[in-house]
Image 1 (tube, rainbow, N blue to C red):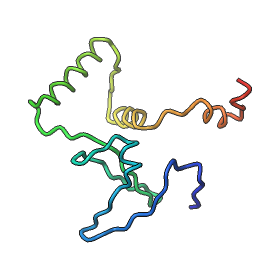
Image 2 (cartoon, rainbow, N blue to C red):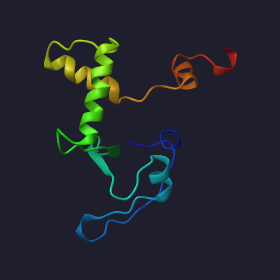
Image 3 (tube, one colour):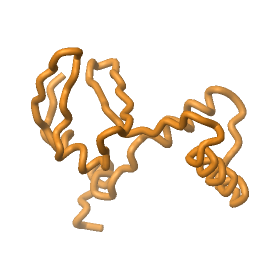
Image 4 (tube, helix red, strand yellow):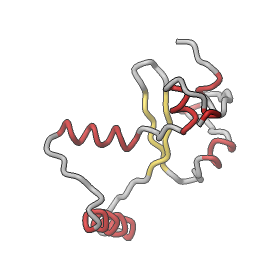
Length: 119
């Protein structure tokens, strides 16, 4: 599958070292706010591409982070800023919607065939 320049914000080649290790470029780490010791999620797509996403792992249900996340969830419920998921298909649709990046206005306009300058 050919790749166009517009699909990437940054491109650099890295070498796979012993024990399957790679070093991520500083430009990418700083742009994604990833620091030493942080966790990332690694995904392999059907087309063979690999994605690396920042993530957090909460190891204890009684940790300060878990309590903070629980309070945020309770606030969303209290503010009625959530919906009801009735089956597993709803769960997967909701997760996919939350993971997909929000299109920029210019990109959305271009996809619709409208020039951003005319708006």
